[in-house]
Structures are given as structure tokens and as C-alpha cells.
Picture 1 (cartoon, helix red, strand yellow):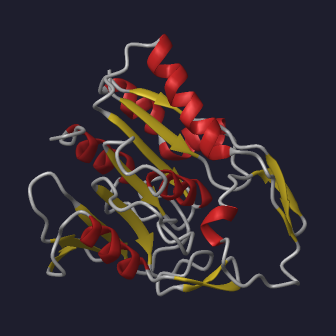
Picture 2 (tube, rainbow, N blue to C red):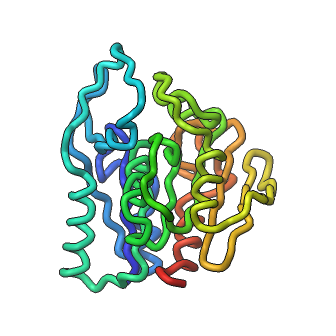
Picture 3 (spheres, helix red, strand yellow):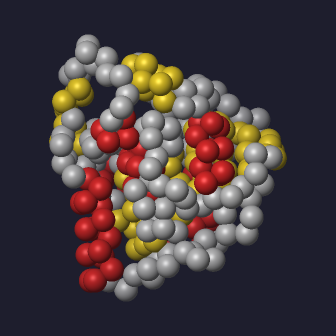
Length: 252
């Protein structure tokens, strides 16, 4: 069976992620094994909650001394790698069809994972977090789609700020173009409006490569299609992600 890891954002539990994205229920209906792992606790400002450790993605970034961030030093790359190994050993996993998605810093962690090994996952689908990091050491990345609101106040679509701190993160389309190039795609894109508030941006890629951005016009920091306030209903991110995963396998 194909496998999907769905990584929650900061402060979100496995249960709240499943409720918000419906990825577990929708994926199970399609025959996927869907696993929603939960991060270790960390404190950011006055908030404490589950938080993926993506510090390495910002290792050379200037840090605001007033940011007041105390991130867990947990080895989340090792944890997620070990989790996938365990699932492969104990369940009937199709190792050519392993995928990763996530919301916010969960999307950042999903991106950081494919930047460690561009071949472990057959495809990725970060939501509102493709740009949470400055560095990607992998020479190649797998096919990906991403969803991001251009009015996201937490992860600025045009780059620069993350949660109000100027960390110099790239713009969404800049990062997507970089990841497209690593797959051998050209710089040419096709933009297709969907309804009144979504633009689908697709890079010109060779067979076996995919780079797509769903730009939510006026969209906030929320999973498209969810019942959370401010979420567009024009597209359902979970269904589109599963549609995308359906058509991609490692080496295809």
C-alpha cells in the first residue's frame, strides 16, 4: 500500500491535523496508509506546543536576538527516517510509493526531509511552508505540488518574513522555480485561473518531474478546503494532493 506522512504545524497535534486536513480519512478511502506523526514540544515566544526541528534549514541565517525561540533539539530527520523504516518493516508498504506532506512548519519539515535525500520520497506536497528554510543541500528533489496564500501573514508569499521575523526566506515561486530546476524543468510556466481566487502555476518539466504551485489569492495561513476560517473552498488540497500522489511513483 502507498504511504503518506502528514506533518502537523506548530502547536497542532496528530488529532487536530487529521481533523483539519482529512488526509487520513480521505487517504484511507483510497487505499493509502496515512501516518500523522507528532513533533516534540518546544517553546516559541509565549507558546509551547509540538514543533518540528527545522533549525538546520536556517543554520547560516541571521537570528533576531529578540525572537525568543527555544526550539527542541530533537533529531526529527532521524525520527522520521526511522519511522518510515519501521513502517516498511511492519506494514505492507509499497516502497516505490512513499510520500510526504504537511502544514506550516510541518510543510517546512517535509521540505527539509526531501532536501536531505531527494530520492527517499516519491513526491512531496508542502502546504503553506515550502519556503521555511534557506538551504537545500540535495542535488535533486522529487516531484512536488504546493499550496500557499498570497496573504499569508505567517509565511510571506513574497519571501522575507517568517512569523514576523525577517529571516530572508525566499518567495514561494522563487523556491518552486529552484526546485523545478533541480528536476530538470525549464523556467517556462503556465498559469491557469481556477475560480475567482486560485491560480495554478505549472512549470515545463520532463517526464517524471513535476513542479506546481496553487496560489490562493487573498489566502491566509490555512489548509485549502478545510473548515478552518479563511480557507478557500475553491480547491480541496487533500484531494488534489492524493490525486497527484496517485500518478507518481519512484522511478516513474
